[in-house]
Amino acid sequence: ILLFFSPGVTFSGITASARVLHVLFSDFSKIFTSVFAAPKSSERIRLRKDLLRKQCGGMNQSLVNLNKIDLNNFIVDDKHGIIYCYIPKVTHHLRLLTFIKAYERVPYLKDLFLSFTLRFSKDILHHLCRIELYKLKLKVSLLQKHSFPLFLFVRDPFVRLISAYRDKMQKYDQYFYDGYVRVILQRFKNQRNLTVNYNVARKQGLQPSFYNFIQYILDPQTETYEPFEPHWRQMHRLCHPCLIEYDLVGHQESLQEDAQELLTMLKLENDVKFPPSYENMTSADSVMDWFQSVPVEDRRKLYRIYEKDFQLFGYRRPTELLDD
Image (cartoon, rainbow, N blue to C red; front, side, top):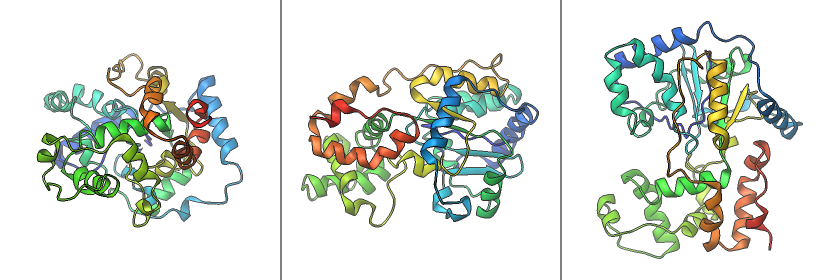
């Protein structure tokens, strides 16, 4: 079974025991092993796939050119044939899908599932993706064969950026404080002698402004030593839609409909009701308010950085932000 979820799904290392994961994946794989016939896509899904083919036309690159870093967002369970590609700051709910049927069938997983529902990305899934379950050559081989349906969920690039700011610059933990918040405060607000403890920093109200965050992304030296952090890295750089043909490209903005289509493809539409989105989810309507503090020229520079995401996934150019 080959699944691609670009969740806001945020899988990054593992805290669950090997036994729990073994049972979970074992049960999960049984659910899906017999359900994948040729999927019937809706017109909306078909148009998105056609757009990708059009936008990606003429690319002279192969999966074999990808290095290990390029495939960091692909997690493979070689025993059960499960692969995920995830994009941080897209829907958080798809990450729960793999556990819904598992906890129903394995009684002692029920409490585990219910306990982690609200903090799933920061507990189980935040630690899942760094496990190397498949070597690079085998991972590439599975992607090239395209033997199973592949899934991808994306989001308006600027809305996703705002969501990343809210989550990682305003509600930062020690990791994001050390690696990003302190750097931005020192570089763009000229703040020195900052505390080393993130809890103290949060109590002091230390945080970059949204414009400081945009300045950091626009600064050429930001990517001098390493790519953007995945929460604000371009989506096409995480899941390579011009190299991998996805069967379903879902959008956060049509999450309920696209998730229902996914459930139908998995033959789970009668068993699973997809949960509603967070009420405080960053909306497209709020984008103009967030960008009020960002000069028009910097908005244009930012658009150029994320332009490929807009074009590949069918998001309109935000003329109200970019044109005088």
